Amino acid sequence: MTDKIAVLITCFNRKEMTINCIKSLAETNKDIDFRFVVTDDNSSDGTKEALTKLPYKIKLIDGDGSLFWNGGMRKSIAYALSNVDKFDYALLVNDDVAFYPGTINQMVHRIKTSGADVVVGATCDEDGKMTYGGVLKTSKHLAKFKPMEPGNDDMQCDTFNCNAVLLKSEVFKEAGNFDSKYTHAMGDYDYGFRLRKLGYTVVSSTNFVGHCEANAIEGTWLDPKLPRKERLKLKEGPKGLPKKDYYHFVRKNYGLLPAIYHSLTPYIRILIKK
Image (cartoon, rainbow, N blue to C red):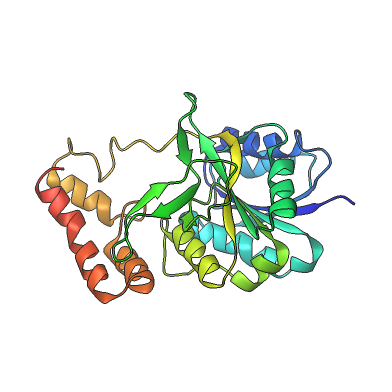
């Protein structure tokens, strides 16, 4: 029996990357029936037009240009939730991943043989160093994390980066949509915490599932070479670490005192040029 997988993506002005991501899935996992759900957030580089020419099952959803990652994913997830009985698994994907051949088959096999409910696909850069995937907490009381390297053991992830996350359809249905409080970042970490709170087993892939370069810190609020005023502006921008979003994340998952602490530490970091 052919496995049906709903692949949920959002994109904006990364035409070549988006197309390559979809092709790397569809062309190297031929025995899987992929149903792509892609929210295009009003791209101006011809992404939407290029997607319509692909020979795959693609549901295109339009955005107005203000969705950012969390908003775009919410639209794709909402559509999939309304059609959840039509597929066996949901695969949440970031379009900057170029998948290696056969890796989705491997993730499906891991779910079927390990008893896991969710498998997080780990990605690496061109040097083979892990970039995204499963995440482990390093503190019970503070929002501090470290990456979980892919492997054969059954240690559970505490949460994850949502670059490649495969869920059973019934798990996806119960988990629901991303929290609408987030603009661009932290929606995936929050979603991972939710899955664990619901009692689901979340494990890493046994190998790297694809290539994905880590986001550079140069030119972002984390760049210590930038002036403090510019860093502060970037931090509060939608792609930075907006105080409302971050406070909500920590307050929701750790409590009031950690939320106050973490609300202050980014400003101290900027102040001391760290």
